[in-house]
Amino acid sequence: MRSVQNIVKKSWEKLLVLCGALCVLLPVSPLNLQFTYKDSGVFLYTGWRILNGELPYLDIWDHKPPVIFYINALGLFITSNSRWGVWLLELFSLYIAAFIGFQLIKKAFGIFPAMFSLLLWLLSIVPILQGGNFTTEYTLPLQFIALWLVFDSNKPDGWRFFLIGLTGAIAFFTKQTAAGLWIAIVISLFLRKLSPGWLRQQFRELSLILIGGLSVCVIILIFFGVQGALPQFWSAAFEYNFFYSALDEYDMASRISSAARGLRPLTRAGLLQFSIIGYAIAIGLILFNKKFTDGFRSLLLVGLIDLPVELALIGISKNTFPHYYMTLLPVLALLTGFAAWVFISLISTWKIPNIVKYAAAAGIMAVFAQGSFNTYMDQLYTYRKFNKKETVINYIKGTTTPDDYVLMWGAETLINYETLRRSPSRFSYQHPLRREGYVDEGLIVEFLDDVIQNRPRLIINTLSPNPMYDFPIHTPEIDSKISYLQSHYCAVGDVDSWPVYEYSEDFCVP
Image (cartoon, rainbow, N blue to C red; front, side, top):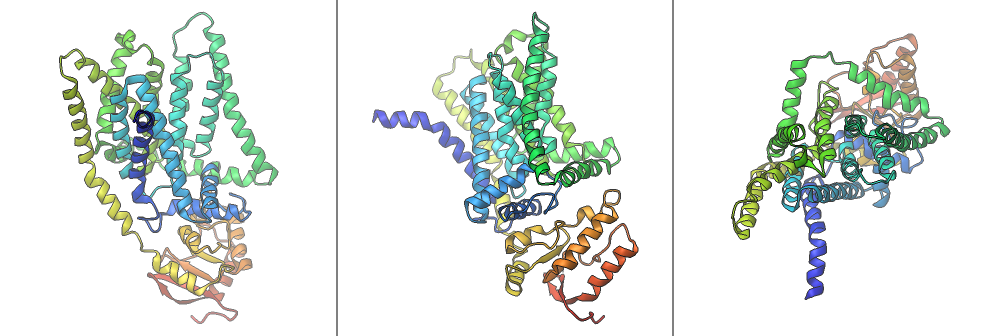
C-alpha cells in the first residue's frame, strides 16, 4: 500500500499534465481531424520530401525557418509518413511545456497557482490551435525552459546563460517572431541594479547568451552552405518575410483592432484577465514593495518586459492569425500564477478550514473549465466536419500513380502530401510568384521550366475562377512558356469545382 502511495505521490503531477495536454490535442488528432490545414500541409509535404532526400528552400520553397520542417520529417519518419507521428511530437512538445511551466510556477508561487495557471493556459490553446502543427506550438517548451533558466539564473552556473541563448536561437529558427522572450531577458539584464562587479557579470552573461545563440546559427549556416542552399534559404526565410512585413502601411487603429480580435479568444478561460491583474500588481510591487517579490523578482521583470515585446512582434504583420498569439501563453501563464499567489497570500491570514479552502479552489477551477466547455466542443465538431478535400484526394489517387507529378495551382500543398504526389516545382504553392516586388523574371521562368520539364500528370486550379499564369511580370520568354502550357494542358472537367487539366501531345481544342 505504501509503495502505491509513493507511486501516486511521485506521478500525479505528470499524469495531470499529460491528461491536460491530451485533452487539448485530441480534437486535432488524425482520429478527429481527417485532413489538416494549409500551413500544416506545407510542413508535412516538406517533411515527406526531406525523407526522400530533398532540401528545404533548394527543392521546396517556404518562408518559414527550417526547424519546423525537420520536426515534421521526424514525425513522419516515426510512423511511416502518417500524421500520427507529427501529432505525437505535438503532444510531447505540449507536455514538456506544460510540465516545465507547472513546475516553475509551483516552485515560485505554490501548488494552487501552478494548477490554476496550467488549467487556464491549456484551455486558452483550444480556440487558437487552428488545426495544430504550427511553429508556435513547438516554441512553447523552449519559452518555458528559458523562463526556468531565468528563475535559476542567480546560481553561479554559466551554462544557464549559454542554454538561454541556445533555446532562443532554436526558437528563432522555428519562427522569427517567437524570439520575444529572449529579447526581454537581454533587456532585463540591462535593468538590474548596479552593484560591485556588475559590468563584468553582465558582460559574462550576455557573452554566454550570444555564444549559445551563435552556436545554433553557425550549425544551420554550415548545413545549408555545404549543400549550396544559402541564397535560397536567405531569399525565402528572410528576404520574403522582410518584404511581406513591409507590405502593410502602419495604421495604428487597424493594428489595435487586429490585436483586440486576436486577444479575444484568450479571454474565454479568463487567462488574459488574470494576467492583466498580475501585470498591474507586479508593477506596483516591484516599484513600491520590492521585498514582497524577493526570490522571483527577476522572473517577474522578464514577464513585465516580455508581454509588450510579444505584442509588438505579433503586430509586425497587420493581418494576424489566432495561432500567432500562442507565443503569449508562457508569459500569461506566469502572470496568472503570480496573480493567484497574491490572492492566496491576502487570504492566508483568514481562519478558514483547509477543507473549505480545497473545496473553494476546486470550485473555482471547475467554473473556468465549464466556461470553456462549449468552445472545446465547437472546435471538436468543426475539425470533425473538415473533410472537404476528400473528393479531390481520392480523384488524384485514382487517376495518377505515385511516380506522377501533380501541380496544385494555388496554395493546396496539403493535397500533394495526402496523395504522396510530388509537385513538379519547388514552388508547390505559388504565392511568392505573385508577390510584386519580391518575384523577378528568373523565379517565374524557373517555375515554368520545372513544370514544362517535369510534365505533371494533372494541373488543378484551386484558385478558380481566377485564371492561372497571372503573374505580375510578363516578358517574351515568360509569355512563350505560358503559351506552351496553355496549349498542352487541356481542361478535362472539374473536381470539387476546381478545373482539372491534363497534358496532351496535341494542341488543346479551345
